[in-house]
View 1 (cartoon, rainbow, N blue to C red):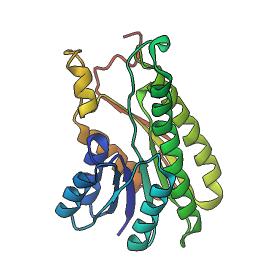
View 2 (cartoon, helix red, strand yellow):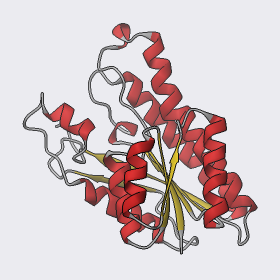
View 3 (cartoon, helix red, strand yellow):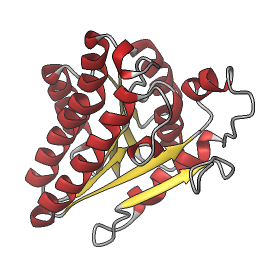
View 4 (tube, rainbow, N blue to C red):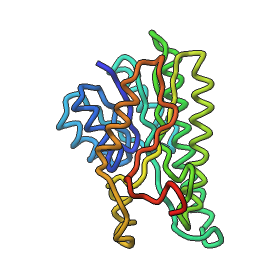
Length: 237
């Protein structure tokens, strides 16, 4: 049985992806702060393991990874998904503490999870595994008033490329999925004020992650964009 840890697994893209992997027979470690939600998922699926932790807490994350690998035996994949949007405002109206919070979650938390996964994959036998980082269309083009989120997602692209390069020596593949307007609570909040916003079923995003994860380690989706077709991403919008 293949194994994966998914961060941000209690809702949105993370939960949809976790449920799809569980339906596909994977052993899935569920990381998020809301332990009661993770337990509900774990009570529904025999191969789900609830691992409540804050991705910015390095000690808690280390304990969660250790608990998972002690049960699963190894770690085949990480879906590095947890993130937050932060304040929607021009840069001069963004409080410094909120900037730091988004940076800490979207970059710091992703670094911690990737570091733990890489170390496990490098040490295990047979060596190797796959890290899939959740970027965003904002890793390429921003929305207005999104300086915190957009900056961090550009950082994720750099993280992905360096892990991909460093992983060649130990059979650790790394790719990035950039998802546009999957129907989650975060997108629903945006759509409430932008009623014409095109969206897609979140399951399509989950299926794309599953495709990336199921490839053999001698093949890799380095970068994938999956989005609602009518989004003004291509061209001038």
